[in-house]
Length: 297
Image (cartoon, rainbow, N blue to C red; front, side):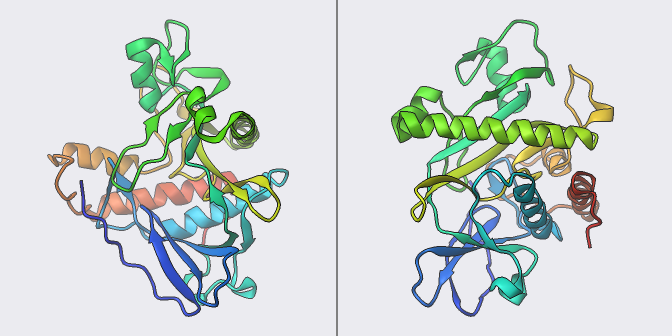
């Protein structure tokens, strides 16, 4: 497991309280306890390690793409209050930061799968199930799952791997009503986003979202990021070919290079070469531009 001690910017008026694999969390120095500042860094992780090499502009891509998706999902409550200097975001992190409502986060990674791949494929090959949900024989890497599945996992600490859990385990953790709401919202988000992405020539294979309780409203609220290459698998529809691994708009270049580098996945990861950094950056930006129709600048 890698030692995790990322640098974070000092921001006047804000106190750093936590760093995740990618995001740094701040709270106001004036004592307010209802908002937080969420800053997306350029850090990248792979195989449960945070790499020393960063991907330039990654934090801005994640933040701007999340904000765009929050707009598309306007019917679902989310945690964003402001995203620019006029709204109070420090100028040093403008473009990659959001001021958000402080939520009481549920300890569940809410995952929707519309295609069989990744850890779901591994489980299917062993037991013909995904998160204990039975699936038919004959599915392959990339097979479409219709309807999409809700396959939750338990949140892990930084450096640990999330563990797939059953829906019953979600019920035991958050209760019947909240579990049903988490499942419903997750699948609603997936269905809406899948249709939007498909219209742009991109397949949304799966996505992870997180929710929390908004103490001010009592509502289950969408938090963290949403529908980015870090939290989702996006595939090029023109290249889709079931039965093999699909090219994706994410950090696959990083994973592939690490897998071929001889790294043992236990020691500190090696530094990424410049061409892997450049190709990964380009892939993130391409995902942003194809999905939003906007030019990244």
